[in-house]
Length: 309
Image (cartoon, rainbow, N blue to C red; front, side):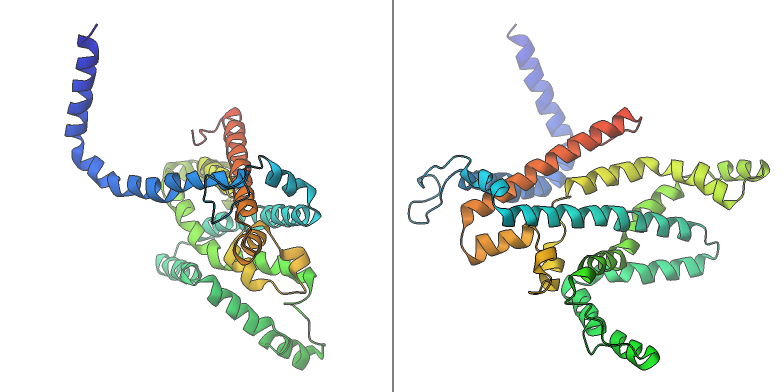
């Protein structure tokens, strides 16, 4: 009986020594997750006490689920939660399909030089920071900006308050996300499309299928697994709608419809030093994301897809 554990330990040691170089390559990534992801989880205890800097992390008064109860009882928090889910839903409906559509369009381009040129152009916005993107948006859409000047000079229209009217806030957010990230998102889908067997298209042409039929019956099924996996990953970040972008776009006129969990936590946790409540909201976000990812992965497997785990 003692020989079996000894042999198992010896076999494990041999495997580690055999794969030592691969393990060394993965060591920086492992250390990153340990130092920046797992060790900070000790701070989640703040969500269950009223943190006092003078009493320390583990000696502050214990309050249990008080802060989680506040999340659902405070009308302001409920409004912020609604805004978060609403903006995230709009991003999934409009921004998530944009790279797929763009990849399908680029896949149909036969002139390789033109295709690479278009790819390079649509990739570029991804490398701009949100400060630059929002700055460009402000320059074009402010009251005396280029768009309002054009509308006034061409059609004689009054200036439209794009940046202060709550009705324009969410469409502007979605348009910015599409413009900035759609091109970068095509990389994965174009890589998936490159693996489609060309003989399938040739057989479809022989059978009389046009370009739309080929896309519907060959191209889309070929990248369906990739779409499902990326959708699962997107659902995992449904509570993260982009702090930097929204914070830069917010103003007193749009705060009612634009204030989301991230900006609310920033105000409560950083500006007002309510660290315990901010930690509780962060933990709540993580739990919701975990449930959504697990549920989406389960449904994907039930519908015949591989899923993530």
